[in-house]
Image (cartoon, rainbow over all chains, first blue to last red; front, side, top):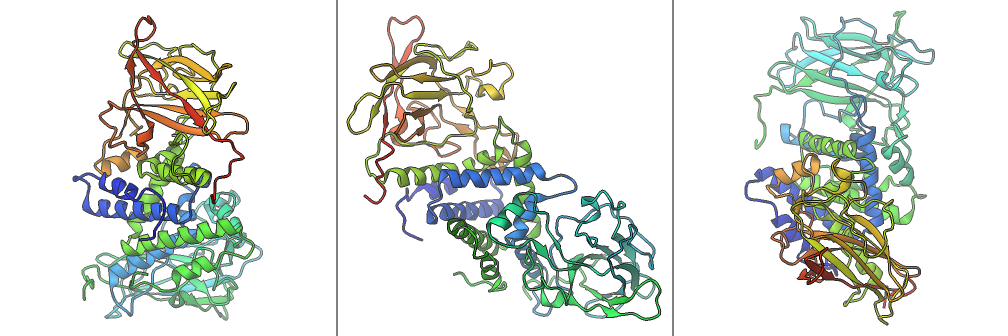
Length: 293
Length: 293
């Protein structure tokens, strides 16, 4: 414990105020949070004005948040916290060195009410003049046995070429660049989408202010969000990244993992798309509790 | 540094993303905050669901906050953070072992627009049937020379006997139990108020939820808030506490200091008040930069 010139009993008093009927996990989390927050304040000799600037920034994040935007989440994202808890949660769930498909953060633009579309559909319902069309396809399989999973759900969402998801952009049709697909009898899914393009996270709120103050750019490398689910298998939340993206090594929310980087390749003789992406998703049965193995 | 099984370079990558043009103090604070938050997540193996519960709680705090209520501040208060940064700031400002009047937290119920009243006024403008009236008086003096400070401002505010400040309670007149007073030619101020009573901090929001989850009571010991200001002196924010209060040793926001505990004594022959409180405020000239002394 660092030496300091402040009341040496203060933090213990706050921690020890937690009552005996608190949930044990909650108690441990709060005790640790209190110790870290107090240490942060003491180590930096945080002043009342600096603390209050932080309070106002967090209040501002809450005030900007609604059913279409989670600014508190975005503030966590730009300091890497969502990617870190994603890594922790994934490791707790798998506890394997060589993992199935790696996870990545959900991000603040997921929508729970995205509709199903037929395989082969084009999720670009609001056209763009500056985009490259991609035929994306692949299989959902059992990680170990490689058995195709029939009727699995693959949900995708991506930003448009202007950097905005449909709920951020009144010019885009609702559910543009989103869709859920069910795998066919061979475990296959396929649809048309845009080659993703890099975009800045919204910088009109506290997350943007933090980025500016940290002298950092707000860009995320081009990516497609994926959630894959199947009965009795662990749901998978991930993102896949374009290997050619200039922001691959300095994602503003620190979500890139090597195993999630993919190659878009030229596609011939398809009037609907000049590029192709073949991407298989590997799921792990939910009963396979590898923890402790 | 604790050993753990997560990406050992992750936190350094996030910290090192801070650009060269960031303000040095801001950079130090963010780097330290990122390290503590990441250590907190790793040490506790914080899951995505637990983190998201925290995000939603902080967003909720922002959404409840307005010009009459600062719930983000209250969340900090119940984990002792405001009291801690108050101690730090006070120590930085004075760097003296024996200090003038000790400071205490501002709390979320201060109002910047409180009006001046004449000395001798009664700040109880909305009467109560269950309160004890107090004649509070004293002087504002220079800490070292004891010279009375003429025309200094003493601002006070307190909750009513129902535990509510006027802005929380539609039944109370605006500015009930608040007032600013100017010291007379002898540096004296005097007015009538209520003997303060203990009350719970608002528990209908995230701070209350945290208290419940921590199995803690929401009560603050009875207190009167004071801010004293005088040209070329350091402004003082403090609270004084009733020695007889049952919550003196377990304040829900950890703001009590021994030197701020006062005694209300019987007052004779005053039809307006049965109790009296004599309280002198000692201010320090602002040019007295004791830091480093």
